[in-house]
Every structure is written in structure tokens, then in C-alpha cells.
Picture (cartoon, one colour):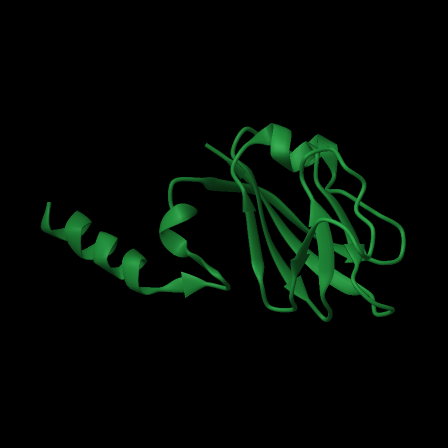
Length: 116
């Protein structure tokens, strides 16, 4: 029990990007990839999405993203800044994800696919 409590405390103090590691500790990584986010909206690879959803970090530039089935544009949906993290905790949200560059610079989305 002592080891478990110590590990839980570690998880509470360390963070990954803008979300805490405690949120992804319950999931197992099943796959990963880098996706270039450019001027045409793109999602994640549907065949890789599992029940746990996806964990994404944004590199190189800012993006816009939607996860309700709306196709993202450079002026709609949510903004994610370079260095931010996105956690979509279920398959439906992950499959509904749409990402696009926020300005004229391509970004890289580092995606880890999660299973429960």
C-alpha cells in the first residue's frame, strides 16, 4: 500500500504539457504517430483509435481543433498553442477530432492512442 500511495503522489506533482499525468495514468498506450497539421483539416488515424481515446501534444505552431464533428477552420473551434496537450478520453471524441493550422505555419500533432 505504501508504494501505491507514493506513486500516486508522484503522479499528482508531475504534469505533461497542460494536463496532469494523473489523467492518463489509467490508460495504456496502444500506438503513436506524428501528424502534420496544415491548411486542410485533418483528424487522427481512425484504425488506430481505441476505447481510451487519444493524448496529443502540439509542436511547432498553434492549431485550431473541434471534436464534435465540426470541420475545423483557422477561425473556429478551440485553439491549442504550441506546447499544449489535448486529451480526448473516449473513442467517439477522438474519431470526431478535426485539426487545422491556426496561421500559415504547419504544426506537428504527436498522437498517442490509448486503450483502457
